[in-house]
Image (tube, rainbow, N blue to C red):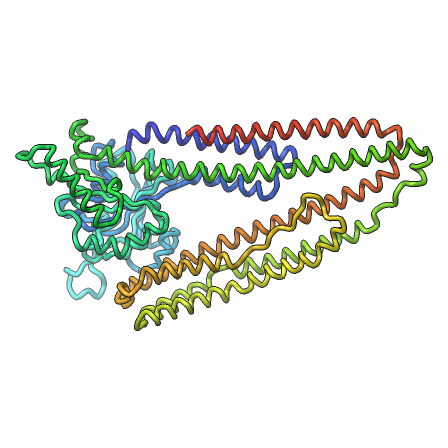
Length: 619
């Protein structure tokens, strides 16, 4: 993907830098003019963080001997002029290899021992016993050294208690290769997975990685076409991920096996084209997502500089499709999400400016009333000045009490949304599924799991209802004359998250159906179902926490604005008795200047967001 590195990544980096710079300028401007609300500050911080750490992962999956490692060599390591990942006789990928670049770490290969067995979630999070990891240094400028270090991926060992020395198993469970590479520096992570039919490996290591990847490349062999085992792999392990928003590419590798010197090139190409159509029809996908390539010839062409052979290998077409899938489609989604976020930020700032405009208008009306009163009677000010607002202290203390109760309720919600209790529920679900006798018992197992999660969420719903009732009962007496433009924030709807949980469980039941029930006797299969469901419920809990925090922030901001409005009203009442007729003209001049400043702030605000939109559209 060298042409993408030179063209795409420079523009993408310029886009990210441009958006980040303009967002920082907007944040500084908002802060300097007291226009940075907590909600907008959180939005801006989240966007800045995602611009820095934006990443996308692709997994190459398939049966053993389909050329997955050779494809990665050809696509990503062509400039090394040497194969980095081991391929060929005696070199079998026996554990998942994650290829990425962490800039704060040295170039190295980290290997996780196969024994003892640890939770796949711990591997995803880089956890587990540090002593179980072995680290080998890598020299990015020395392809031979890196290739020699990577040879250990194919190592096997004889487990303790094995019946014979011939009963060997993979030495490593997981490998992480950390090297500087243009595509990796832009947030790409590459997973080379072991063949699902590799001896002693099985399909579980690959299945555990699929939820981490946004793009999945299913590698077949052009000389054999789609086999029955590969079709079963597609139906049992891959197709249900398409509904989770993941992109799929199907690659028919080893197309050179069909290059026959006795057959015209056009006839061979027509045969490969028909094979693409047949595979697409069987898998039920668009033919544009199926590609025929020769990774071996493509790599050789890059090493020798043979442009004609490179074109015939089909590698450039695949690389362009990968770039579009990995980066351009994702970039378009990024830009649309940013447009929505920018619109929300602008609306929030405009609301704050509009509130200032209403305050200026009220002050102007107040000054005009004083002018009229002083004109009618020179004795108005000393005798008619209103008394201070004696209810201010009472209102202020009551709102402070509400804020204190809110804080305590949010702490209860935070404790209820911690997910350690899910482990036992998931394990109980796995045991119930393993011992199920039919679809009815499976449905009951999921219903029991659903009931456990709902019970864990009961304190969240109770706290949310208490907060809602407290606001409904306490705020109307506090605000005798409702503040213009202020509305009580809407409560968090727990039913929305229960709907998401129901959908997740319904997806499991739909996937199992009647055709998959026999697989529940397989421990790996039930553990995989439990891991997937636990991960999904954890995501829902985290989203619920984010929404509850946002709701709390809105309520807190609302109460602060009520306090400010009351303080402003009390101050106006006090000032009314102190103003003199000779100061009204000065007051009017100040208000006029404030209105001019406010108009200027609106102009500058529009300029900032025009610059943001321009930066977001540059790429």
